[in-house]
Image (cartoon, rainbow, N blue to C red; front, side):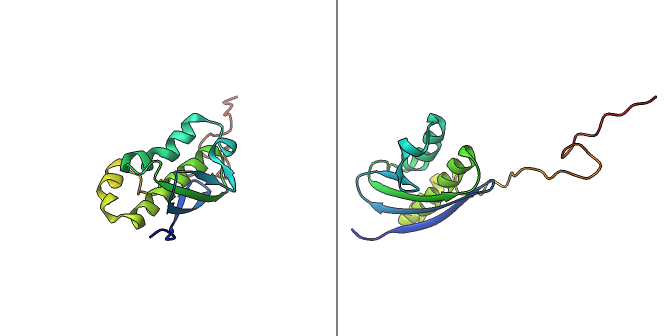
Length: 130
């Protein structure tokens, strides 16, 4: 099990994260950079660490992530989703805990498209009665 890696894909908005887990010292590498170099917001770091802390594997698994698309929040959500799915590959007993926390469900909320005849997705052009 020392050289075994667990892979999963996570998605959020337009971001896609490919996640690999392997037993190790607990380092998190995102796009060949450390998490401190890649992510500057503490809330995003907290979101990424949530599944590891919840399952008690924080500091026991090395996380390698390749993420593309989206912004900071979307990428953090995609990484969390990917880590959660990879933890299931690592240990299927984590399913109940992760499912209850909502980490296994793909968040389907995406930006609504702009419609023709309108200023944006829902806002109309200003109406002038006279």
